[in-house]
Image (cartoon, rainbow, N blue to C red; front, side, top):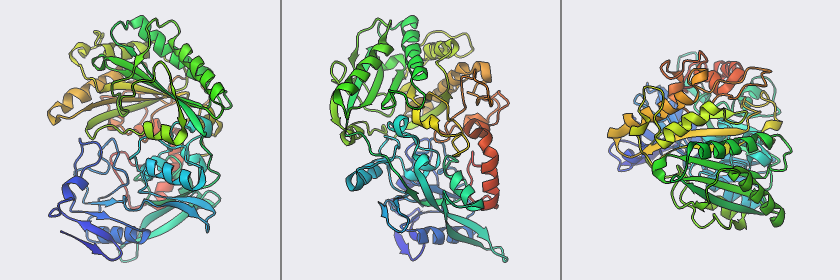
Amino acid sequence: MSNAEAGSGITVTGIDDRYGALCQGFNQRWTARPDYIKIVRSTADVIGALEEALNSGRTRVAVRSGGHCYENFAAAPDVRVIIDMGRMDRVHHDPAMGAYCVEAGSTNWHISTQLYRETGRTLPAGSCYSVGAGGHISGGGYGLLSRRHGLTVDYLHAVEVVVVRRDPHGDYRAEAVVARRDAGGDLHDLWWAHTGGGGGNFGVVTRYWFKDLPRPPINVWLSAVAWEWEGMTYDRFARLVGNFGEFCAEHGAPGSQYAGLFAILKLTHRAAGKIGLITQVEASNPAAGRDRLDAFLARVEEGVGLPRATLDVGTGEHPEMPGMHDEPRLMPWVQATQTLNGSGDNRRGKHKSAYLRKPFPGSHIQAMWNFLSGTPDSGDYDTTAYANPEALVQVDTYGCRINAVSPHETAVAQRDSVMKLQYQTYWTDPAEDAVHERWIRELYSRAYAETGGVPVPAAPNDPGAVTDGCYVNYPDRDLGEEEWNRSGVPWYRLYYGDNYDRLLRAKQRWDPHDVFRHAQSIR
């Protein structure tokens, strides 16, 4: 049973049929067992839900918007209450603010379609349809339009956050605070903290407002090509990966003629049968867009010596996309977004990330080849024993407009990278957890062996640095473990660089009692 409680939302307890489903997010590795889940419908509900939980002694509260957290931050064993934001999904123009309002429970696809239908504009956000705005935006937010238009947070005008304080009697009191870009002092710091500081750190985000949103291209070219693993040698693999990285370095600066091109290289495990490449190119001028697409594909394939094949296998979070290897498809932008709107199946998964400022060093390519092809590696781990078609390294083009912003203007410190990597592996059997986790940990550790097993952030004024840390929206608890992070750089510097100090000050001001916490929250 469940009942609606005035001012605090809908309560779902263990005797409700929905309880089991609502205890689990997208990654089925994590299942919470809270005392109850609160489904909130308004800012007032959030305030009531927080005060009700905290003043009843349930001081471990987690917040969920889309449920896509890769780690157990919203589904940890000690969580007593989950506040579910899914009913707060309104997207509209707010005349009082003079900005477009997005509630935190909205999903990427809902945001894209509603904004586009109403205004012809969009957020340069992610393409995975069911990712929630609450966490996606607060962590920075990027997608296939970001090389042209920047990160989602680059357009953030204001944010509403429900924060918590304690009164003189020791009781918890929650209140909604609106922090704007043009505010001063502590309020500006709270706004800034939500431009890449990550979710679950300062309070419950209920609404975002955006100004000066860009218009997406009218049409795009969408291409999906593949190369068979059969016939792939190390030299061919190194040439393919090297070409892709060199293209990104050559065309990653602001103002690049290729800013309207976003590509996703899917370096799958050999067991998948094919390596994939998905590309979207602006085609407001179809002929010019097609020329750029053809030039890009020719650059990536140069010297590889393998024919293109159809991408008829799933690759991580994207479905199979057959029939586009010979002839790309010209389609309206919103239709292309729908075509790419994959989050993969609900399954178990482990993820890691890295920013690259330069093309791949040979050591990175060698490590990826050994672990993806099953070639014996020089370390203690047996790379030949692992065969999973759902394991891959995804490499996204990055940079351009993203890199036109100072690393301190927002909380996103990585503002001169040209590629973003996501290491992924998926499975369904809980008994196989250790096998898959070990493989991805060993691969990552081997790829960044020269920097202590992690992609260390670039030091200030170091033009030779290759890596620049990790993406907070692809959280990885291993970064805090000495076994897997031997760099001497703490996990929070990998995410935030030297922006962490300002985030820490915001935490101390707005959440001094550490109400909003998880395994990698700002302390």
